[in-house]
Amino acid sequence: MQIHGTNQLHGAQGLSGPHFRRTAAPSEATSTGQPADRVEISAEASEAARVAELVETRAAEHVKGPDGVRTGLVARLRNEIAAGTYESADKIDAALDRLLDEVG
Image (cartoon, rainbow, N blue to C red; front, side, top):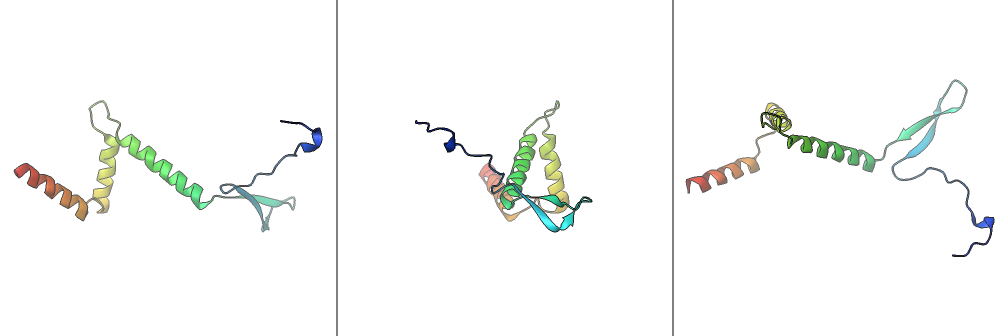
């Protein structure tokens, strides 16, 4: 690596990228007349946050309480049953297949 003096150095770079964009809306202004800051979250960042929350929720479902009950899983299943989204054709088919395997 060769260094040819300080003329090869670059100044500070601004923040820009796909997940963080700082913009000022023309209609928004503070009491000093300066444009107000605004942050926009990209669709990719929103989806990543949603997936992270789902992973955290599903991980909590595998934690057993002192009585051995996975309370996170029980709570999710109760919510699905109450909302009417628990039973599906796939789940019923799988249960029927298991029952027929046991009966033989």
